[in-house]
Amino acid sequence: MKAMAKFEIEWDAPEYEHREKDVSWYWISIAIAVALIAFAVWKKNYLFGFFIVIAEVLLVLWGSRPPRVINFILTDEELSIHAQKVHSMKEFEGWSIEKNDETWADLHFYFRSRVKTPLRVIVPVARLGEIRTNLKTVLREIEHETSIVDSIEKFLGF
Image 1: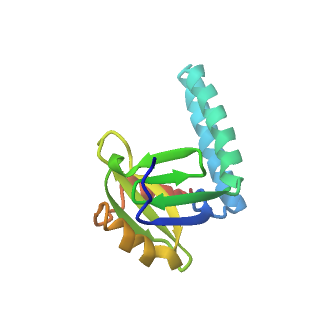
Image 2: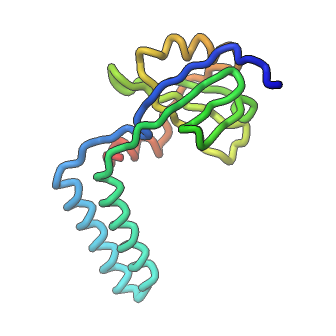
């Protein structure tokens, strides 16, 4: 028989932070892809050119797709993501919070394994106090440091 959780916090949030892209974003993306394809043809590296075509199609499709709404359940024992992926708190060494705006914040979970990148979960700012208070009882809070990948992602609009 499973023991009762000390706390259980449930919320719904978008699966990622959606940034609106204007027409110029798509034109710049296509121009870069065309330049890379021309370079691939010049170097007679057709496999690279094919990869660029596939990557650009996916970039345009995924860039315009609105995020799904995901259900999250956080307990003292696990984090459940849309009832499809469950992470035990034992997998994590710590967590941090990065506030995005007045509505949403990013909750970063850092894995014990250094090979894995941090797990980023979007949480409503209104629930931050409750989440912070309860998470401190099971994991240590780590000061958030924005990575270069995060900075590039925000700069590119992803």
